[in-house]
Structure formats: C-alpha cells, structure tokens
Length: 419
Image (tube, rainbow, N blue to C red; front, side):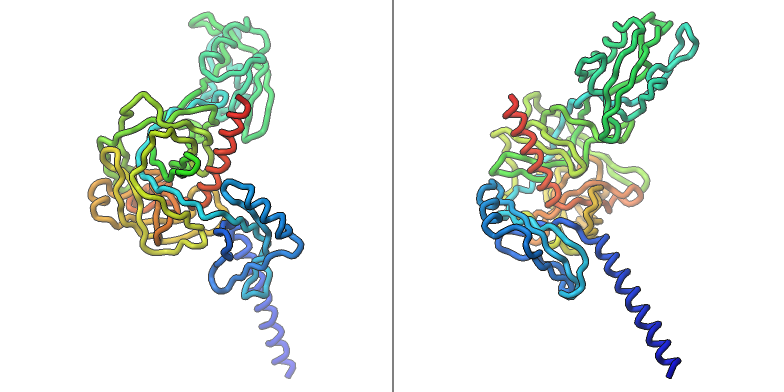
C-alpha cells in the first residue's frame, strides 16, 4: 500500500511540474497584446479563453474612447486561461474598427536624412604627439549618434568637420546617443600633419538611399508602410535615426537570381526626381510615412488580418520583379511565432510559385515589404531571406506594422503642429 501511495505522490508531483512548465511556456510564447475588430471576441485555439479583468475600464469610458478615435481604438485587459480555468497571463486586447488597407507590392525608393550623424568609423592619424585618435580618447564609439557638437545641432558630415577644424585644438563638447541613452563627451581635436587641419579621427554618415517594397497604403489617412524591417547603417548595423526623408518612384529593370550562400537582388532605378511621399518613422517594424495624392496603388483594399487569425498553409505575396506593377505569387506559411518578438521574424515562409522561382530563385533583396495575403486578409510582409535557401524567408505580422503606422501618423501630426 505504501508503495502505491509513494508512486501516486510521484505522479502527482510530475503532473504539477509538467503543468507549471506548460504555463511558463505559454506565458513566454503567447503575446501580451492582441488586436480584435470591434464587437468581436479574441479567438485563439480551443484550449484558451480570454476573460475580461473585473474593474478594468468602465464600459462608458471604453465607448467614449472608441468613438473619439479616428481608428476606433479602445482597449481592455483580460486574463488568458488554459482550458478556461488555469490562468496563464494578463493580456491587453485592443478593439479597432476593422482597418481596410490596400496591399501594395510596388517598389519604392528612399532618400533618408539622419537625425544627427552616425559614427561609422573611429580612426587615428599622425600629429605632433605621434599617432592619435581624439574621438577614441574621448570615448566615442562606432554606432554612436552625435546630435550636438560645440553647442551646435549637427546633421551633416561637413558640419562636424567644420566644427573640429575651427576648434584650434580646444575642447569640443559632443552630445550623443548610444543604445537610446544620452551621453556627453569632450573631444580635443589634434592637428593632422598631412593637411594641417584639426581633426577628431572619426567618420560619420548623415544619409542613406535604397529601394524596397511598399507593404500597404491606408486610403483613409494616406499613410503607408514598407520594408517590414528598419533601414540600418551598412557599416554599424544600427537603425538609422530618421530626421526627414522622401519617397521616390522606382522601376525594377533587372533581377540577380538568388542561390544558396548568395542572396539575390532586385536592380532598380529612380524614374523621377519628384517625391511621391515623405518618411515619418524608421523602426523595427519597417519604414512608414505619408503618400501624396498622386499615389495610385494597383490593388483593392483588404481587411487587416490579426495575428491570431493566421494559420500555416497556402498564402500569396504581391511583389514587383519587373517594371512598376506588382504580381501575385503563391507561398506557404510554414511556421508562426505568436510571441511579441519585434525582430521581423514572426513567420517562416516558402515560395512555391514556379514563375517567381524561375525569375528570382525565391526571395531576393529589395522584396522586403512584399505584402502577404491569406484568406482574403492582409496578414504580413516579407522581411528576410534564408542565406542558404532563397526559396525560404521570414515575415512580420501586418498588425504590428499597422500599429507602427499609427505611431508614424502621430509623429507627423506632431511635426505639423510644431510648424
């Protein structure tokens, strides 16, 4: 009898430990935030139930918040329960008037000016004291974003060079950002022997240009989203801090086919000097801004698909591999990561469309931002290609990009108000 009691206790302990591990797993892998359309309930798999937290926000306040928002956003907290009984975590559910967005797939060019200048190299040179590096001595590192130098706001390489050159070797205060934290450094420029000018010993970048793909356009607001990942500095890998920028019309005139170990690339050219839009935000979710009235996307509007609505299986992407107009290509969504990851790798996708495979080998650079449509809804965008298998790549959730587009809209409105 004692033997059976002991075995039963071991079994119960094992079940408890297993349940705790399961709760920890779901707590980590399930997101903290969800979008739902107005009047609907959050629907996950049958083993989960979302129970609204008592005493969260009154119905009256929620209704007022909803009706006062242009996008009809209100939110409440709920407890996510396993089997309707076991609490997993507290989540935030945001109700929105079902956004209707136009999935694009058109290529676009960007001209981006940085907010401050990005340090891309810290080097040394010969001076009276031998080989020196004033910037390194001051503690300046590659990837730092310099906002002020010598008390002046700086936005170009030429401005930094002039301030250091005119210092006469006297101390120059430098205000910079590193990993979103503010720092102050003091640089003592040294006389560079080859050209007899005072230098700090660093190279900076103040702009970037390139091409990508527009993910969606919001016809109600004129806002757009593209890329699905940030524009980063080619040397440091850091997100380029956006000061301002323009959107330029692009034509795709060639494709370098991707193969294992060598990603392919779209070749494009700017076909006009007249901007068709402005940039408003460069973030982990992509590049966002506002289009001019002359922007006319090819496709019709579709509802925004929430992440919990996405399923593995067949889907389509819109992408442009020739000219200026997108085509639709078949893909498979192979895996979905429902966590709150913001690295642009929420889904693994695989191109199965024979036409696209013949043209590009699958996903190539420049296709980032190509919208993904499943079951008549916009659900995501292409972000990265697998280096060793160009038919496969990563994608980002469309609801995350939509949320970022709302932030970009607020940023642009703030700039208009300031002006």
